[in-house]
Length: 270
Image (tube, rainbow, N blue to C red; front, side, top):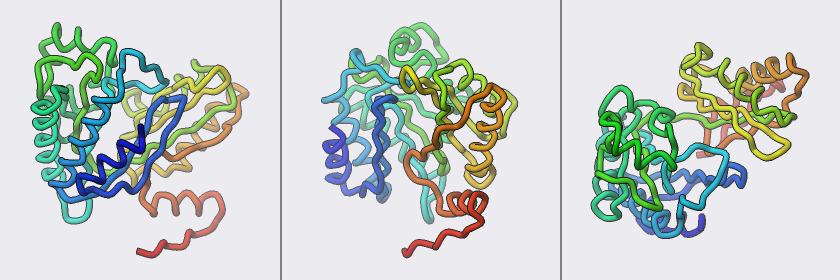
């Protein structure tokens, strides 16, 4: 399945630079780069594979989702601008609805209204509540499309700067603790500005504080780890491990490496 997704993206001319899958989240993250036209074509090709192969009516996983292709962010690199990314998000959303009948919400810099800017708000109610929400709540009608797809749901399509997806696993099964820690850290609850966090259960014996670092230069990864470690220690719980999902800027990794080891990473060759 994931191989088919990668093949579809690359057949459209984009280049896959990273992929990761997690059985507990029941979710995969694929990072690809390309020109504007390649990126839109790759997005449509990927949506087609997920439309054909994933039925969310029988899908279960730890991570919130509204669609088989849950989130599709366009991130400007090099000389590209955020406005360029917004344009691509609109183009992809229009084509996906026209060709596959999968609706979308626009989020981030592409959002059509302030209440749609944050992904967590767009995902509220998840796939199971999607059709009813879009039908009954005027403020949550789709930006592109007029009905949720019966098996593929909808897609959150956005434009945003680079972010880091970073998770810290606790040596505990206490989901309430993970949720308390996440609440204390995230910006929306008065924690670290620009940080988004959720407390998630991985399995019967493990829980996780799942974070999106939306300002990659503002919050070091080691600070997140140590704040989680300190909060967990107050409950007598240790940090088991941490993980990076997708890619991160070299400077962010180097900053954390120096904090823990007093060492500077070797700059990779271009």
